[in-house]
Image 1 (tube, rainbow, N blue to C red):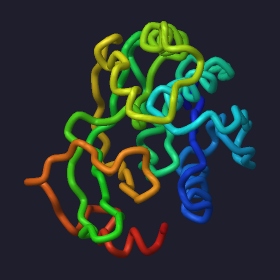
Image 2 (cartoon, rainbow, N blue to C red; image 1 turned 30 degrees about the vertical axis):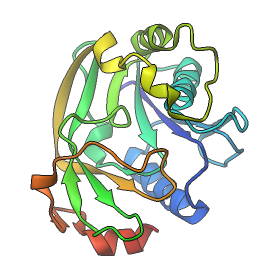
Image 3 (cartoon, helix red, strand yellow; image 1 turned 180 degrees about the vertical axis):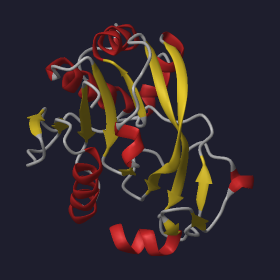
Length: 218
């Protein structure tokens, strides 16, 4: 088994039942890896670090992940978000280098917002929320990204001014046979997300029908 810790970070903004179902799935597919959760409300999930109600922003999400990485005792860490489903393969990937971010692909966005069709769309660039990286390297990389912004940022769009971690660090990708899925809900930080519209589908291998998956989790 890879020397890896799962860093689960959340603003606790999603519906509690939904987030508990996500946690149950994550616990199952990542077993027996250690989990560190960094939350804005106390939660009973792995080793919990509660940072308080610092607000929802990209800066704060990055800081929460960094706090979890600092707490980790393993060579590598991987990201896990409160609105993501991951395949087991994600937690079995063995990186060749500690100083490279390895993004998991393929990944799909599943639209679960009111008034939206329950379709999956590919997110071709991958996501910070689906990466495996060396612990020490990502702590230093996040220091560069967050330098000058303070510990916590305002809960608004100012996080768009942050440098891109994928450009600050070396990056690569790895392919899993089962995709990861990111639910786009009404409680997400942003209403929109980059996606490849032409690749939309109502059915995804392993995960099945989008409407049924939304009903199952939300």
